[in-house]
Length: 222
Image 1 (cartoon, rainbow, N blue to C red):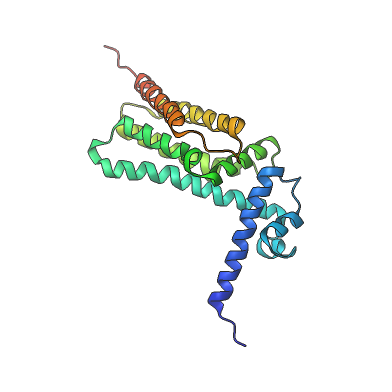
Image 2 (image 1 turned 120 degrees about the vertical axis):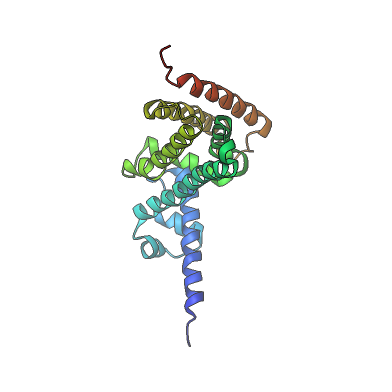
């Protein structure tokens, strides 16, 4: 019997994806220490050796769950900004930058139950770390914040580097507060946050942030 390499690769990829999905749900619900390899493989419908075969162990599986989601969130936030700026061209405004970033940041609360699941997983990791400290910073925080700072300086060139970074911290801080509030209020298994209420909060953050960025522009002495 001759094996089809394409079908074999597809089966391996499908098994790997099932393991990642099952592990993410269980790690979010029970934490790293509270989740066994047997529980993960049972939920994924695979044998207990599959975690070692595909990932080299539970720790590497845990890390890969984060790599996958951090890459997805990073791409969502940075690509939305670059696409909006490219489309607007010379007509790009501060309002466009802040509103685009806000929408991308909060999108998982509206459309994506998997995004909310990952929020729960990140909260557990922060309370009981099992990853190197640099993972979040290098894979999402730093590239996303740099992308927003560059966009802010493009539409408001009077901002210096320091002021732009401070504005980024302020904007991200407000949005992160909403993310944590959603976790405390809704959890991962409830209905999504009512869109109208979330939009009201987002609109306030946008207005507040746009005003704050403009106020942060260094003033020239007259």
